Image (cartoon, rainbow, N blue to C red; front, side, top):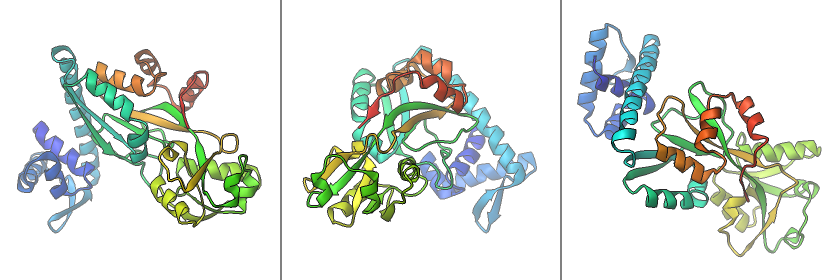
Length: 323
């Protein structure tokens, strides 16, 4: 049994059991991966993957357990390498940050700029990640950190830290009667056609909760996950939009923005990482630059807490709110 074989089966799972995609991600050949998987199955005497013709359809029952154990072994290997690298080359390495387009565009640039100036020998990779549509869980992947504005369910090996709070804003075509008002009520919004986030998103949950508490029902005519899509339909006069305030910083002159502070509660965004990875000192610094309340000491003292205990701890501390 070789670590490379274990790495192949883990990556096959991460890539939806698509060997072609896995080979592209690992910069190797499909036949090479297939051969090593077959050799591992022969050695173990069990089938790790179910097959439909030449394609893999998923893991067998024993395959699920094998992949889980393989992942734990590979995490130990990665921790050992990271631990030694923290001594031999503390200012060199790679940092993978997966986040949403809005966070990458509006909130991360200053942190990234500071980080790259201080650690020019650290390769920073930024990718896009969204919580699973079937629930508020993060998909398994080779990320160091994920930063998401969506609420995240507890997962056994996932540290979930509150990164900041974010507010919602109303965007209105400038020729709409409500654009002339400074203070807009939920009652007025309940009588309008609304455009906002899709069901189950954190922003949408906050909006619906505020309307429900007021005994009102919002009328959504269009829903989308991308704030840019919502802006476009508002500019076309389809309805009034409710989006994250940070997404209103770059907006057309034909649209008027009104704060919804006091009407709709602020939402939390989270920075998450696998508890089994070894955090290099430059990783701690990246987190603290982005979320100043998350110092190395605070992270080490709270990362093991349950989400409920975590929120009780941070209720007494000031988090940055992006508006």
